[in-house]
Image 1 (tube, helix red, strand yellow):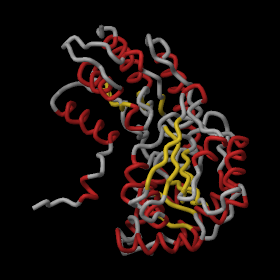
Image 2 (cartoon, rainbow, N blue to C red; image 1 turned 30 degrees about the vertical axis):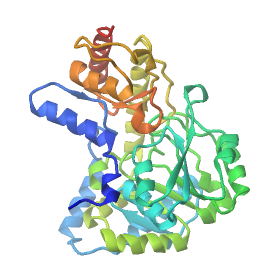
Image 3 (cartoon, rainbow, N blue to C red; image 1 turned 90 degrees about the vertical axis):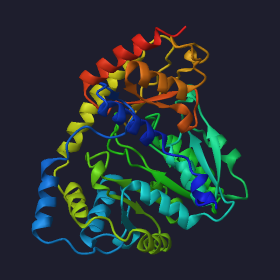
Image 4 (tube, one colour; image 1 turned 180 degrees about the vertical axis):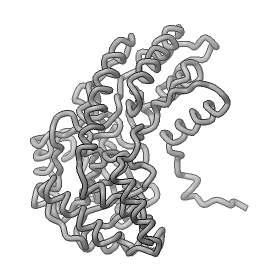
Length: 398
């Protein structure tokens, strides 16, 4: 008997989570591993947010919340969208979920029929492709490289659209490259989308608050896209709340209702206590966000300097998020001290884990195999120590 479904057998394991798990296992065995694989701020959740969660417990917010989320939280998200992004939504158009990952997956499941095409620029976040598979869609990848800052052009988008295109997905600021599309670049993409009114847009903006070039623009600000765009965001990255698992989608009412129906069958609402914490994040003092952003900027400057000192690395200075994505193909074909040939970026990432005890993620997982991703969501001391180890390990390759 073939116990498992074809659906789950065709699904790839998350490479970022797998690498983080491997590093944790090595740490548990007593090895000093520096984890630069995981996209998780090392800061603690701000105090006023934790206090709100404690108050929610004491106030007995222990019953099932509405599937879409508490009205107070959805109103707070609407205020944030209006004040920060100049986007007008009603609470009925907001669905709160167990992290932005669930919001993304549910949105795709509500939009895609078997065989529908989903356009995704590469590099992309590792889960996008697998989510499209779950929805039985077909991914259409637009390749980019370091020479164009890992960003697609309007011409590339137009060339990728066919009669089967249902969705265009965009992540800005980008995981893994850290690139941010300018207002002008987004306008050029929007004008292409104006020509194809049947193409829906998913805009992943989870790294919105981690920008080093000023305010991040959104495709949703183009009014002619308002009825066919889903804005995905959450509190995980900007407020150091990864474990609280609160994400959300802002989208046209017909899709919002569909997502709520799906979520009602999958998981029901997100945690009541976490929702009250997220509400405090959006309603409270945002100086904590700026303090963390400044720390990330300092770390970015440090890691870019150190990475550019590694022979063979070609490094772009990221505009946002907390990753660098250097080209590392210089090391492909080289041999380890144990006699193994480095065939690709995944091999290189594994070599660095085993020999430098630094966890990273090969670019193959993000659709750009010549690169490797390092997270700088950790201390400057650990970043410096990690790149000292990386440099030493890479010098051993022949």
